[in-house]
Image (cartoon, rainbow, N blue to C red):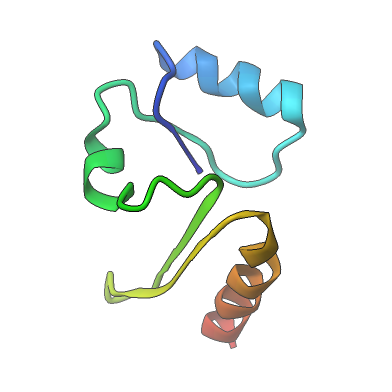
Length: 77
C-alpha cells in the first residue's frame, strides 16, 4: 500500500496501527510511486508485480482485494 499524503515514514507506522494493516505500507511523501502507479485514483488500489517486475494484476476498490490475493498466491506456487 502506498500512502501518498504522509509527511514521514513514522506516519505510515501510525496508519498501520490505526487501521490494523497486515501488509507492507510505503510512505510516499514525494508522490514518486503514486506518479507511476496512481493512474485512475482508485482507493484502495492493488497492484501485483511478479518477480520479473511485470504488473500482473491491477485492481481498484475494496472488492478487488481477494482477486489481488489470489494472484499473489498463484505466483507463489
